[in-house]
Image 1 (cartoon, rainbow, N blue to C red):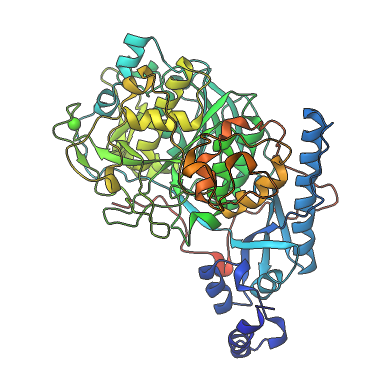
Image 2 (cartoon, rainbow, N blue to C red):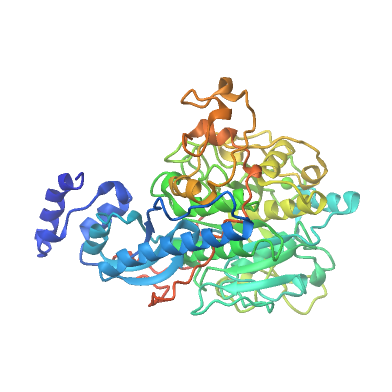
Length: 579
Ligand SMILES: [Ca+2]
């Protein structure tokens, strides 16, 4: 009955608001502390939330005889039960259900503050978080330097194309962003597009528009082929495929629940489109540890299912502790921005002032992992988009061309896709790499930088040529454990599989409880850093784990409204410069 101790405080607050105090005890262990404070301050306001349900013992019971199909079917049913449980809890509080978020065993919903408090007392509820707003991360250049693409040269991408014959052909990069305009430099290579800001998202092979103008720029840095500039302005992997997962509206804003829907779609469709990389040039100020962050959970699940997750560090530098979420997660590849000073020479490079840096605020992790050029980057223009209209001086017209086909932007948003493109190159050459190997290769082949520290520029500047050429056999495995939600779900969903240990002599041959690695099973496993470090994730079969969009027929998903109002709303989101 641990919530009883908190009752007095909330009763007083509610009393002041003229609401009966009976409404009001809560379990503080099931709600994020900063969100709790917000709810207590405005108990009668509406809040957009994400409600995770508990996993129960009988949700996923597999039999040794079950084949892969049977296990997949059972995993799907277990995921449905999770959604049903969360949906029922919301309905009991008379909340409005918005979407199923099976990747994290949750639903998105809208409830009054007092109802949010009551939810924390529901035994079927594991955790309630605010459906936080996110912003695309960029920093429009304030002056108009002479147009060039030094950043692409500095990372050695053209060397990888010419010397190794590697251009990213056939590799899919999901751009989780504001959409991708059908720019001629991406012709025929936007292989799928889906819009989670629309009322009824459906997948299409016809490119969507990009009302914001951000995603098109990002996609161009990954895979633009320079068609309209005679090769002057290309991305890092000019033959890679783009999967356009639109989650950001025309104003540059999104919500965690929309991002989660995008990520669960990527998980479910990763094989169909050969998606090896997700680029997330977005972030939010973290409200706590990555361990209780659902975007971190979704990113980790993708990572262990074989999809690299590349995330921009944030544009809230230059001080320490400014890394945004989900870049704070130890498993994602966090990219900070370098200022290439408009030359392809390294000697004049600097850290971009705006680039967020570590250590991370809550977990004190060393971030970013590495940096890439991110200042005054020239890439694809989305004509008539919000950005285009707001900052027409960023338009770039190639000499002799009748139209401005390119656009110049700054931000860690522009640095992340340089790394995502590099990863696409790596997979063309070595299709069987795993995310842990990719991260190791990226970091072990960087161009070292003479300035800065590990906490601002990470390992150094990404080197696309060397990352593709290397035969490093190492793997970078975080010593930090995965997020709470992933840890809780993992056992239920993949417990039918064996643990495969990286090193039977690791940690003196025992786990942190003293059990020999060979003796560790799903029944006695300890979910701590030592265990995570030693698990060979590649030993798991993730095909049986669906975690994709579940539709539960008996639930009426009442709202696809993306707008936040009441206590949830901030100032209207815009494409604000953040430098
Ligand atoms: Ca330079």
